Figure 1: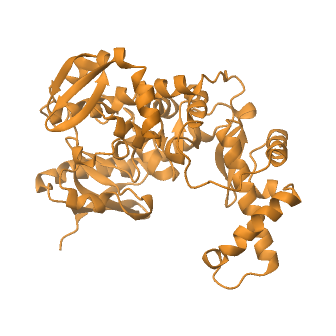
Figure 2: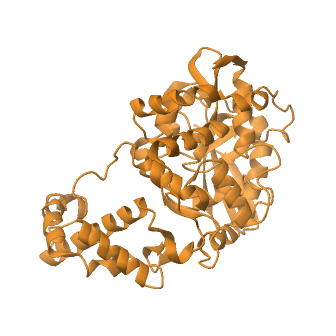
Length: 407
C-alpha cells in the first residue's frame, strides 16, 4: 500500500456525508432516478419498512420526492427503478438492479443468519419458482401454501408446534398449526428464491407482502453473476467509496461476513488501498483513488454540511462496527442502537448524532419530537424545523410542529 493518509475525524465524516448524499447538492433527477443514485451510492438502502427507507432516499435527493412518487417508482412493474430484496445482514434493501447479480453471488460467502435449518427441499423450491414465474402477477405466501409438499410440511410442523406458545395467544387448534406451517414454509421458499435472484419484493396484495418474478419485472436485466470472491471485492470497493476510512471489522459488520473471509478479500486488494491515520483509531483503510476526496476540508456553513433527520435504520448508522465515529459517548449507544436490532431515528449534525427523534403524522401536519443527547444544542432547532418541514412535504402534509422532549 501507499504511504499512510492522515485525516481528521471531521474530514472522514465529511467524506462520508458527501458520498452518501447527506451533504452537497443531493442525488439528481426525479423520484426514480434519485432512488437509483442513492441505492447505488450506499450499496443498498436498508428497507425493512418502506416508510423509513423512502424518507432516507428523500433527504438525499436534490428534488426531495414525495413518498407516493418513490413508491410508484419502486413498484411500477413496467419500469421499476430499484430492486427491493434481501441483501447484506439478511436484511431487506433497495438495490440498483445492476448490482443485484453481484449481491446474490456475494451472499453465498456471507455468514448464515437466523434462517438456519429446515431448508426447503429442491422439489419445493422448483415448484415455488414455477408458481411465481407462471402467475403473471406478484404472488404471496397464500399463493404457494396449497402447493407445499407433504414431506416439507411434515418436516416443519414439529418446529411450529414447539414454538406455538410464542406464535399464538391461546392453545392452537390443528387447523391453526397447519395454517402457520403453510405460512412458514411458503415464506422460507420465497426467501430462498430471493437469495437466488429469482424474485424480489413487490407491493402488498391486500394485507400480504407480494413478490414478483425477476423475469417479469426486469426482463432486460443482464444476469451475469461473478465468482463469489470477485463479487465481494467489488462490493468492498463500493463500500469504501462511501464509508471510508474503515477497518476489516467494519466491512465484516456491514456485510455480515466472517473476518477470515474479509481478510482474504482484502489481501487481494492491497494495491488499491491506502492506510489511514485518524486520531487513535487503528487499522483504517481507504481506496487510494479517494485520497484527494478524503482530504477535503469540511464546509463551514450549514448549507455545505446541513443537519439531517435520519430515519429509523438509516444506512449511515449501519456502516461501521465502531459507533464512536458518530456518537463518541458510548453510554448513549443503547439509546440509538437498541434491542431487537432497532436503530432509532437520529438528528445528525456535522456527522455526529446529537439527538433521537420520532414523528406522528396527523391530518394536515406532522409532529416531530426531539429527544436531546449530550451533544445537543438549542442552536440546532432552526435546522430541525427545516428538515421537519421537508418531511411533511415528503408525506404531502401542510407542515410540521417540532417539540423538544425534556426531563
